Image (cartoon, rainbow, N blue to C red):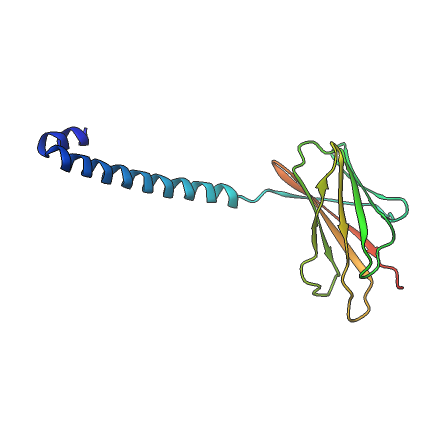
Length: 166
């Protein structure tokens, strides 16, 4: 309707210029609104469900992170030690998992960000190579916080372990 009024009152060249300006303003405004909506969607935090893990040794027997009839079985390739590479293998039985990460934390210490993101190597198998930093105070108590990302939630499990002293 706006364009019809402009067509009647303006010569053809001015009409094309005004139409382009209106189209440009509509595109910019629409892009802005779409960007706002998308950023809101990305900022919606998923609920975190804490999963308990029984006593286990990830280097010897592996550990089961179980919730709601499904599980993630985690095993380290060897006993972790500072500055010695090791592999984390996870066998996933949770449906719809799109990401698995591990945050390595030393309780009571600031060891910077030590996050590993596992790569999916087959339908159920996820793996990553890890390397723990040296604690300058000689600490060896670690917590591996597993984050299992599903479309509607994040399952989080804390696995405590000690590094070997070499």
